[in-house]
Amino acid sequence: MTEASDIRQRRPFARIGAFLSERRGLVRDYFAAISGAGGRLVFSLLYFVALANTLSLADFGLFATASAAGVMLSRILAFGFISALYRTATIRPNLIGTFTAGFVLLAALSLPVLAAASWLTYLLFFSGQMALSLFAAVIFAEALLWRPFEVVIIVNNGLNRFGRAASLTIFGTVMRAAGAVAFALWPADSLAAWSGFYVAVNAIALIAAVALFYPRQRLRFRPLLYWRRLADSLYVAGAEILFYLQMEFDKLLVLAIGGPQLAGLYAIVMRLVDLTAIPIRTFSMMLVQRMMRAPDMLKSLRMRGGIEAGIFAVSTAALLSLAVILHYFPAALGRTVAEAAPLVGLAVCVPGLRNLIEYQAELLFARGQTLVRALNLALLAGAKAVLLNFVMMNSLDTAAFIWSLNAMFVALYVVSALLTYSALRMPAKPV
Image 1 (tube, helix red, strand yellow):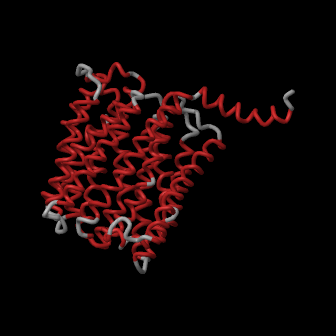
Image 2 (image 1 turned 135 degrees about the vertical axis):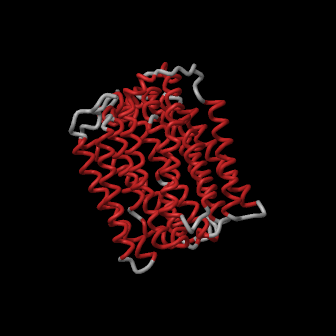
C-alpha cells in the first residue's frame, strides 16, 4: 500500500515532469539556440586571446575601439529595416523574399549616410591616431560584411530554425578565431596586416551564410509594404545606434581622453565583460519572440524580478569565476591580457547591470514600442556620457576608474528600469 507521504513527495517531481513535457518544444529550441551561444563563447575567447596577444596593447585598443564604432555605425545599414525582416520571418515567413528585396534596396540607399557618419566618427575620435584606410577597412568589415551575416542568423531565428542559427553563430566566430590564429602565425603583426585578415574572414563567413542558410524565396519589390514599416524601422535604427552608443561610447571616450594604451587595457577588461552576455542574449532572443506573440506575458512582478535576478546572478558568477582564474593564473589568457588581469575583479557588478540594461531595451522592442525605446536609449546614452566623463576625471588611476564603473552602472540601471517598466504599463503596439 502506498503511503500518503510518498504521494506527497512524488507530486513535485510529477509537476516538474508535466511542466517540461508540455514545453518540450520550447526546451528543445532553447538548448538548440544555447548551443550556438556556447560555441560562440569558446571561439570568441580563442579569437580574443589570439588577437590581444599578437597586436600591441595600443593597436589592440585602436582596433577594439574602431570595431565598437563599426558595430554602432552598422545599425545605419538599411535604415533599421532588419527589424521588419525579423518580424516578417517570425510572423509572416511567406513574405521573406519580399522583405529581403526591401532590405537590399534600403541597404543601397543607406550607404551615403553610412559613409558620412563613418567619416564624422573618424574625424572626432580617430584622426591622428589611426590611418583612415585602416579605419575604413574595419567599418567595411563590421557594417557591410558582418552585419549582413547577422541578418542571416536573425532570419533563421525568426523562422525558429534555432539549430541552423546556432551553427551559423559558431561558424562566424570560428572564422574570426581562425583569422586571428592565422594572423598570430603571420610574419607581420601590425594593425594594417590584421585589417586585411579581418576583411577576408568576414567576407568568407557572409558568402557561405547566404549561399547555404538563407531561405530560398523569389525577391519581389513591393514599395508600399516597405513604406508602411519605414517609420518603425527608422525608430529601430535610431534606437539601435543609441543602444550601441551607450554600450560602446565608453571605449571612444577612453581613447579620446586616455589614449590608445589606456584604451587597450580598458578594451581587454570590457571584452571579458562582454563574454558574460553571450548566453544571456540567447535567453533574451527567445523571450522577445514569445513577447511578440503575447506582449503582456511579463505583467507579473514576481516573474520580472525573477528573470532580472537570474540574469544578474549568472553574469556576476561568470565574471567572478574568470577573475579567480586570472588571480591565480594571470597569464592564462596570454601576457598582454595579464596586464589587465588585476582589474577584472574590480568590475564585479558591471556585467550583470550591463546585461540587464540590454535585456530591458529588448522588452520594448518585443512590444513594438520602438519610439519609446529610442527615447529611452537616447537618455541613457546622454547619462552614460556625463557619468563616464565624471568618473574618468575623478579617478586617480586605472584601478580606481574600473572600480568606479560599478557605481556608474548602478545609476544607469536605475534609470533604465524606471524608463522601461513605466513604458511597459502602456499598451503594446502591433507592428
